[in-house]
Amino acid sequence: MRTGPEANEMKERYASDILAEFFRRMTLVREFELRAIEERRGGLIPGFIHSCVGQEATAVGACMALSQEDVITSTHRGHGHLIGKGGDPKYMMAELAARSPGYCNGRGGSLHIADFELGILGANGIVGGGFPMATGAALGFQMRKEKRVALAFFGDGATNEGSFHEAANQAGVWKLPVIFFLENNLYGEGTAMHRCTPIEDLAIRAQGYGFPGVIVDGMDILAVYEAVREARERAIAGQGPTMIEAKTYRYRGHYEGDPQVYRTQEEIQSWQRKDAIVRFRAKLVDSGLFDDGDLEEIQGSVIEQLDEAVAFAASAEKPAVEDALAGVYADTHNGLVF
Image (cartoon, rainbow, N blue to C red; front, side, top):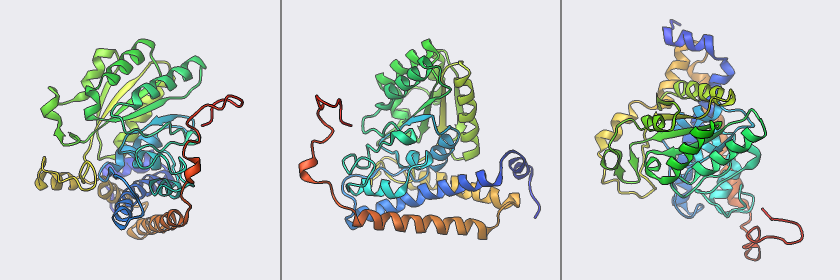
């Protein structure tokens, strides 16, 4: 097979198993979201679903550039972040279905999954709620002289919240090992960014706090991966935070059922033509390292994994009513119950 210069560079820079894992995790994010939407319609999953279909490259590229010891804070659109960091779809689906084996025993639901063992400090239904958590974690790493970083995922709307500016200022002053990762999908719920923000490139806001702001193509997983990898190296070298703005797009509404009167089908379709998974698949085949059969096999394994996750969630027990307050109040004899 004849390969182009971009494919040759990719072959030289990345091992085939890493490239396969990029593709597998992005595919898993996409298929998990589509399956969760289907199961919500079927009644297994209660409540809202805020899908990240279209944003797979930002979630997977960012998380795979981190170490297992690094931590993230997520958002209300956080399923991709959890899978990117190594979350198990089985326990994720159980959490969405409000079942006891879920990551938060069925109490957090779609918006509030956490797993401290994986370094997932929590998804958050509050816009900008992850900034103080990530900045505080980074301060702890600095005080303990640990080579670890905290990465805060957030959307364009969150840069207008006070928590962003407070965290960025503190991180800049103390040169904390934190990465502020902006998934700029152009809309804060139904409000177009240009209607509430007077600048086009939000990464320049980092300049006011004394650290770099980097802009990347959020539909290119390798560009995202490299930007976060470089930011991580900078952070653990004691050079402080970085803000990364990944230009991306969500194909579906703010939530499932959103009428989406604020944007056009033409706009959505223009972004779908830049689809991160389709583009990356083409690069993999062009590299000669994979053929269509290899990638279809990966996709098939993902579908099997999700079938198992749905079956697991559907058969799992629901939390007992008498345990509703467990973990809410302090145990005066044994310390806090988490």
